Image (cartoon, rainbow over all chains, first blue to last red; front, side, top):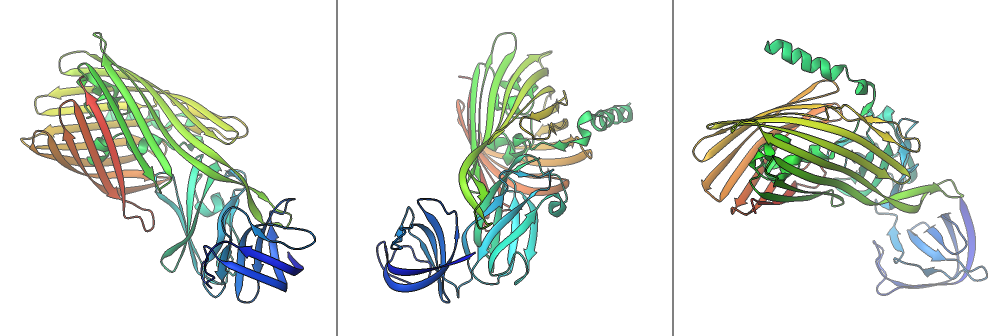
Length: 185
Length: 302
């Protein structure tokens, strides 16, 4: 869902230089800028913002003040992502948690900055690969934005025992993101 | 006669009630000490209390008091650890052991008002097995052992428990030794609370041998596992250029879901009499992770 805010005075201040790559720390002041953003985890005190315009995305946790949108970074500095760079945005997550494998399984979800071919691999707790699937660019699992991929007995082809499993999202020969999930038989 | 015994063993496996359920993941399958991993996951030839996890009959090698510790980490996150202690009671040897695999910080997820999955918390997973074994020497060269196992798994609100029993025999005949064991012979299930389906604890039949040459020991093992009657084999050897140090190599077959895979393992051991230190190494299947390392220490005959 998109929401439109007219931002009077936005201060995002952490520490050092502003770069159009993966930003760890930066200082920036924005005034009177309309920013369209999608949100998740809205609650009373903080929101996780995915703020994007044509050129960049801002992903992190912020406090929202009703009268003035004062965005103060909470916990980790927000990540500034150049959308021209192929990247997994945020942390991929499995749902439900734990996944009920014998009752329909679950999904793995993640955000991509661009259409990307994603090599999806799953390992058990002993580091043994139990599943692999390549999602072509621009298809579900490899398209720009929010992706939801199924993970169930239909995909794996074998009942998984109750345990924890690790999944990797691999792009262009590098690990773009990883996550872990619990599975109940 | 041999055909009858083999047929009986196979019938024992395929007739078990657990055949229709999913097989549980046994954390012992990754190995119980760097020493045994370094020779190809061949069980039953450890001379320390770690035998409580392998073949209870092999505890005959504990003359007074022994202790062992083993640890490794997979995927920089999943921690494995075991510890054991064994002692000579004067009426046989007794050992207890505990093994645990754990993962912390597993994301607990929900759906936000906009329909996207979000993290709402975290929980931990623990998979444990506790062992108690007793060994008795029937003759100077024939040793018997029996062990009990308690399996426990916990994940969020889910708790699972199960029991097992192992029996084993170990024989020494000059330069040749033989280890035979049947694990999880009770053929019980791990029963879960709160909606989880039961998983069966597979019966495993292991037959291994060691032949001692001068500076080289050669090992071999056959392992038959319930469910699809998977037969896997392992071979290994150690080269001991001096008494207190050896190098080892092994080839092991192992099962992942319904597939048999194999790997080469390498190891080394420093055996200083009282204190022994072991390392093992193997290639990793994990993307961009070249290798997996294992480490264990044992104290023998304090």
